[in-house]
Image (cartoon, rainbow over all chains, first blue to last red; front, side, top):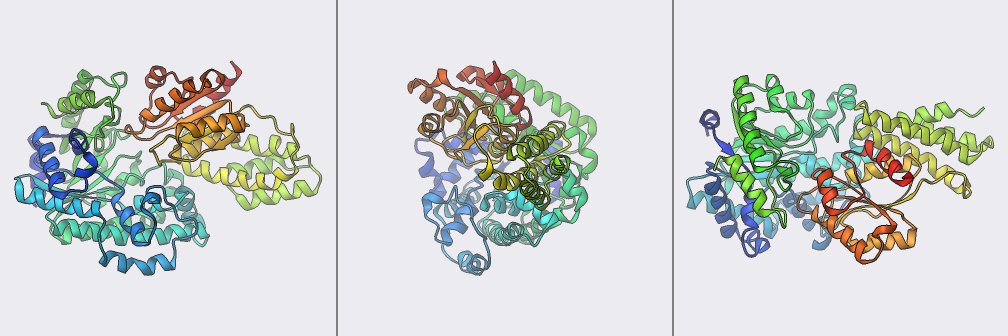
Length: 347
Length: 211
């Protein structure tokens, strides 16, 4: 789509929570729906309709590509979520990757593709795909990815740094293919979620000492994923709800996403000077705290919405008010969270 | 004379080879193992904690410092006798059931260990009964519970309930933390302590166990 589509949405004063998980958990059997493309697609459409958003965001399920890789490598299903390579990954896993990419998809990945097709066929909403960022996926494959990243900067021949390098190669291959599959299934935009690319994993000192680390660990692979999305004819949205600094934000801006979605650790009005006005900033009310009235009340959400909107208007930067991440359903707090998301959406 | 300052610097700067070399030299020279820990390694990690609290260090610098300390500790440990290193308390730490995130938990564990607590790390996705077992079998008097997700945070409360049901809640201090956790939530579910970050966790727990 034309970049102006997003700029126009921003200019219209759109408010856009990402909250498919909330609506999913209103259903009788959320887990079954997450594996049923048509049912999942219906939930995604219902979410976009409830909150009045033209973009139909999917679940932000950052487990999909890890599950695809590890099931392809023969890791038992019950071990996948917590699985980390104890040595490697290395040559054997890299050699297996082409077969995994051309092999069977997992049920959840299949459902997410079918959900995109359902949204495209049954609504006027813009189907949005979702992939985890390659660096974030690589960190999920290693027991201590932060130390490995440190070593990648200062001692790239160390076995832990080599393991991270191999994990990154696996990750980018999977994410590129996942993004391409989603575009082929009808996604007109894909949100790439890269929350590990933050100062928690890449300290300002490291980024200053070894500037090329950012390219090596994060940016080169994001460029490849972006190309897979854009070359397929879809729009590239970047999401990072981690704690970011100027170096990271300026780097993200070079990717020219149509939307840059940031978390509540970033004070949006203070970072607009680093982001070109062609990039819509999106976010970032503290939706991870919506479960708690002590942290923020429904009236507090309304006030924070007004305040952030006004501050962003003063900067003149294109902006869409939203949640800081996918708003998750918390057992026992569902109604409270929904009331706050509706308040954010101005409903 | 033992180069405790050099050892501290090696830990602070995360220089594993230097830390292990200095430690081995001290052991070979007959320096008391307890002194290596108490004068070199722990003061080094305390500086790391201070710098982390002051935003001079970030998580990677802390982890790499802890790696240097652990490498040195591995050399010292076989030589330590009971009482060489005072233990402030034994902590059973873990990420609660259903939650696989471990960065914050690991960071707290390292900070506590570096400050002189004995830490028993139960890992991630830890069922309530595992914390109870750790209290009984490891003599833990502190239970540290972490959750990163709003969806798994209720399992902090469930773990506290399980401790109550087992009649152990009054015998241990429960401290909690994680991105969605707040002081208000800690108060609501009856936790004894809450810390918004790993750096301030050490001071909070020191105050709690000395009260």
